Length: 240
Length: 143
Ligand code: SF4
Ligand code: FES
Ligand code: FES
Image 1: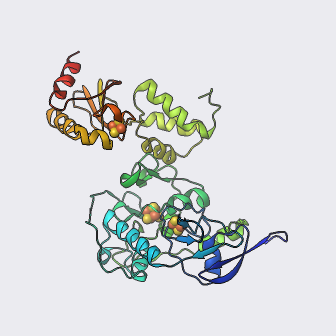
Image 2: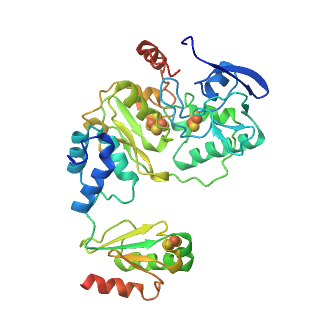
Image 3: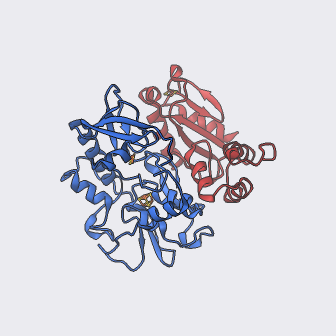
């Protein structure tokens, strides 16, 4: 922290907290052990506000704001949990479940999946929307890794880690809305990519079983994400 | 592209140029743009597939864009689209195998006053009559 950073004070869930002026609501909340659910945000990567799970209420504003991309303001009063927020968050998670195929019991990431653990934490026991199960391709062309679009929640973490940390930008999102999908280079088999360095970072930041190491069978794919804070620290980036 | 100064933010402009010149954007064009503008391949692909305006396959000789906006839909464009899909055995977004007709849909043409609206070869047709629209397209195809 440089000496001339200004400090702001605000209230989160009624608790007085102080923050650096460039901090997001999410990072202040975490420092104060206040839990806000997130999926697309990851320390060390740019926040994009894509999953909307971290929505919070701010007093005086009718609109909900994504805590991961909203910077603190003096005197702000933030509510991170309420009936309304809880029902929206549950709805968001349910919609993620129905959009693709998330049958946990047969997933490589069963037990290590952020979608699964969030659903448990939010107490989701039933899905109130019809399942869609689109049949999407599984790409096993890479010698070490696999990509299953059916498990992807389109959080974009793989895209950002590949671009911002590895510098390869092999992945991106194509299309829009429900048809959007993760693509490798020109939507080609992963194994044929000329930009991929096979570093495996995307595999380890992926919150679900969409990106996995080959040879892992159901429930075996736990992810190692320690490299990210370390790399960010060593490079001296100050965005958290 | 020289005109656009080889800057990465020129991508959309450049895609427009390719689309207008060739009628569609193929893989070679995407690779070329990626290299020339120094933008990752996947990002070029992502942008090109995000906008409905860009198409990655050659379009048919004739194009028919059916408006699926609320006003037009209520006035019967659903029927028009259905009839066309059945008549030419293609779905919206596809082109007939002989390359004669591309069938597309739009979200709202901004011409709700003349709903139902369809654009046939770039010409907006207002108050399109679902019962007789197939004949009209057939006529176009014969030209
Ligand atoms: S593959 Fe994984 S990391 Fe990438 S967008 Fe899908 S869920 Fe997120
Ligand atoms: S964590 Fe904030 S929008 Fe996904
Ligand atoms: S709904 Fe068709 S022009 Fe607006």
